[in-house]
Length: 111
Image 1: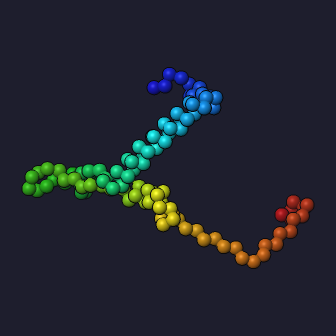
Image 2: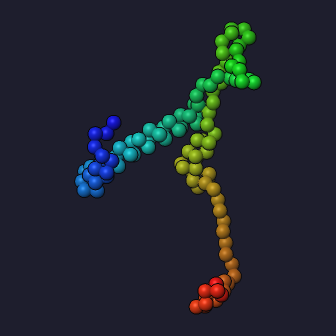
Image 3: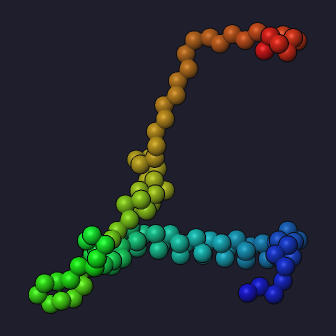
């Protein structure tokens, strides 16, 4: 819980260059942690219980609940686009050929 008003720290950031640098460093560090977690979820994933028809599924031999490792294809796609944009970015090839003619008049109704 912060003990100062939000506007106060934004003012400090504007007025104090050292505070602004520390702020940016904290944002970078937090973003690195988020990226590492996204990478972990994309590659390693998380264990989830197997559910069938709304019920947890048990191993018939052991009676233990079955689990599966769930990975995130969406996070994997975002990471590939971020780190290899030349290969994985969305490609839009917009080309214009020919002339464009515009008639501009002072009469608003003509527009």
